[in-house]
Length: 118
Length: 109
Image (cartoon, rainbow over the protein chains, first blue to last red):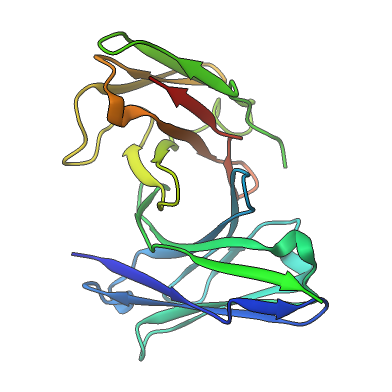
């Protein structure tokens, strides 16, 4: 059974950098598949952030592209998201997910809440 | 990137059928068979219920069905049950090699 678990700071100060990691179990990232980040602002809908495959090929949301970096570490079976110069608008629950060959997100983490505040 | 539109809310009585529409454009829904639907209960992670326009993952009830016509995808829930009360999101791959979610539809039973 594929499982994903996000980890992160919970609270980030305005203008600083948010770093999140998604640990994958039950599936080796080295096998293939694609991995992604999706977020949800409080009381709002889902927003796709980015995808990455095991070779490091990335697909980024144009609205966030200039502020983010996404990477994969096959040795640790995890992938990460870094978002710079955060504002209150970046607050919300961040989910990591596996994107399969049908371009859908079939396995999700439980989400991690990030609050951006001064 | 272009947006997908969904009705904000849909309601139905137990046992009834409801349909949620998701309208995009010729650069996303109209172009690819990569439309998926997700169910999200409060404070839970989204759950994939439909992929590749019409397909149900293993374990998802056959009461969920979906289709696509032109730039509009639709999700139908038949035999509505109390546990179907949730938010539903459509998602599509786009010509820009990005993924886009609809704004979500709150289903009330």
